[in-house]
Image (cartoon, each protein chain N blue to C red):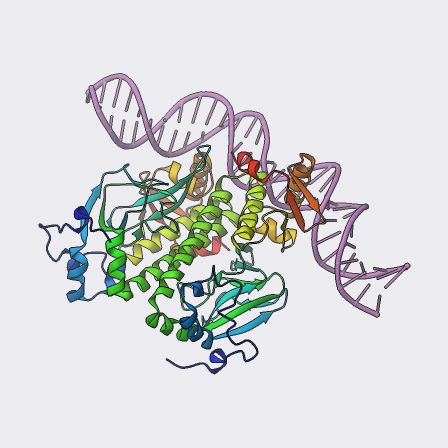
Length: 240
Length: 240
DNA sequence: TTAAAACTTTGATTTAGATCAATTCCTGCT
DNA sequence: AGCAGGAATTGATCTAAATCAAAGTTTTAA
């Protein structure tokens, strides 16, 4: 197993950063106690991606895994003829970069200035042998991603435009609560075009449906990015 | 960890059945060598489900995991108002029953008479501690399921009815080849209503689109269940 | 500060696939 | 063999969302 120098570099300005990390409770590293996490820190590295930059591309060799510390990311697939489909949005605490192949099966791009914790694939896989709990925790996370993807299949197969948007808002709200942030209002960190693409709709339909939801007092918009759910508890009824 | 008697029962009529099992090469158990697989055999049990029977329900406590040995299964979710969405079809070698929660997040039903290999959840999880390679192999399988789900999201978000059907046929063909069976013709083990539901279409659209594909000589139908892909290599072009 | 570019909204029209409605075709069963 | 009853096909019509089109609005950067 070849060591990869750049990825075993410790960030000298932030000793014990893992112990105090804001996403530790929800990310895979949360399974390690304070004494063990120092060893994980030694094989991890901080890295930033400005808004709009690509973290990796579909087809690239998988050499690195990431934990999201701050910001948000879209992952999307391209077909041969250039059609694009966003298959997920990822948030702090999410694990990024695993694949069932030797190459990444989707593109990853920062939606806002984003901070990641980076691991060399081989080094982290060797670490699994020492701390099998980590691999088990990652299996949990991947099972969760699969459940989220299956929910999205339901949404695309059976929900109307209005239901898709409301479900999307609930998902973001719940995601925020999981991170210990307020679940209302929510901030849309992606443009309308990404929302439309993710939900299998067009920009125009998203815009019109938002206008309807505003008229019916189901949501309030604060600018174009922030949405207040007027009665979050009643939204599941609209999803019937 | 409570032992569950029924699931530690060895099938007396089939000693060394694991060593000779037809799906061993692709299922998670394939990671074990002949001497170790005997131990897995000791905690596994054969079980059959006739066509149309439920293997488990959404919301049931997860007590059992399964390997599919023979047959095929549909997994589907129900919304509160009774809408149904098939989120996947599973085939021999697939691992069934893992969840990110304490309960199953979908229903599983046999599409034809189906043979499964059953494991008690707790017993198998303890087995992981002894053979961490198994957990790693299952992580691979779950990552593959996730990749398949993301492909389905692309299909539902971007493909036309015709493209959905052609992609579906290619998927079945490739699945069959993976099992060492012929990739052409293929057999549709599910009714039109399940195909339509899975692809986010109606029965009528599936039927009409099949008629078009027949007229254009892209496929030939042998009865209602068997389909010959006239030129499998050229089908990816229709997916553009 | 202003102009350009990018993003968002709103309106008019079109359309792929859904829905409604008959047949027709299997397949198992007596 | 005949005959139910589900499964599949085919036809007519409708509709939710797409597409085409034109303003507004916000952001960026000079």
